[in-house]
Image 1 (tube, rainbow, N blue to C red):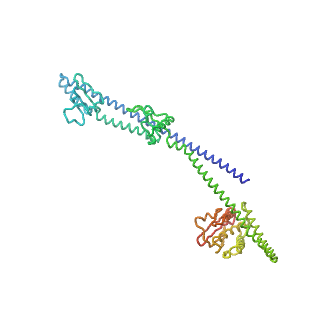
Image 2: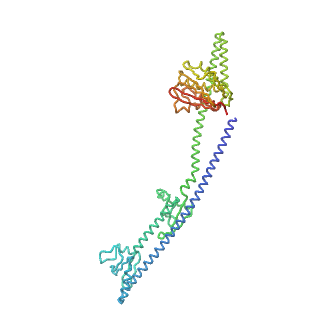
Image 3: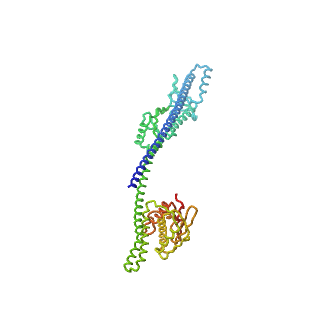
Length: 503
């Protein structure tokens, strides 16, 4: 019950920690989003101020063009008055000279004077110059000079037409380009904020920026975006010289919106993967537990089966011939002691066993002595160190003997009941190294780390628990190491490293 209570408490603690982590992540991300939104609003305000400053420049430029246009109109009216006076018959020679000088000083404004019949009787600053000397005021020429109303010269029936000068037209083109660039800069602003520019009705879209061109071609989507922008921010009002009043609508950038929803999406994705991982690991753990339980049951039956079969055999032998009773009693005693050893082994699995100072050499020799008569006849055991060599270190004799048995049984299976098992031992200053070497078929490199996992086995009828128990006994109980030192087609070496002093 204590195990399940601890498990329940850990689940509650982990759930609380998970909630705190999610809350902290959401709080921190929302704080970053708020700072980013504040920075974005500041950038929008700076951008809006830049829009107004450029707009003032556009208005100033337009006022300058208005003055220039009025100035040219005054020049043309002066020319008309001069031409009217020139037509008088009582002009003196000085007056005629003055009037002609005024007319000749007009080097930039194109003018045409026509009679009652529409014939051009005078022109100046026409480019290119007409080829014919007899011209009629009609067609494309009349269209070009119809921008402004003509000035009628009284009593003569003549009319004076004019249009903007070449310099004025060039400056006007520059202004138009400037306004066009200004509109483009509004819609393609550096703050990456989606914007829509409308006319004075706030419904007709003139331009837009940082929005999907294909989707904005759909009127329903465009109206939806415009309504969304109206609900988020007050529009910026601007007045263009010729286009009139316009409004700039804007909303939060896509990056800010994505940042706002990113932590939620991140938590959902992580939760989904954690849920899938939990299901997979839960299924894997249950499968591993089933294999361990089955393996323990089979290992118990296997361990108990050998001495129990021997006892039953000696009992039957006594029944047949009582003269063997003494020998049978000795062998039965050995088997009973073996059952006691097995009982100790299984009782110590799951609890922390005691480590006593013991002679490792004696444990190894006793284990091999027990295994020899129970191994195939074609299996030879070789111990490369003498029996009288004492190596004393903290060890649990029963469990360490079990480890050697499992390694030797795996070696016998790998050699298919025929070969040599060699046990070597090296003593160092702080540790003792034991190598168990066989002449079997070897272990592939790709699975050398997996052989110690519960349930792993290469045998059709194996249960894959021997090496797993060996690893648990050496690493968890003795604080040592066990691993595959080397393996090839000529054999495998398992190495055990034990410390002379436990912490």
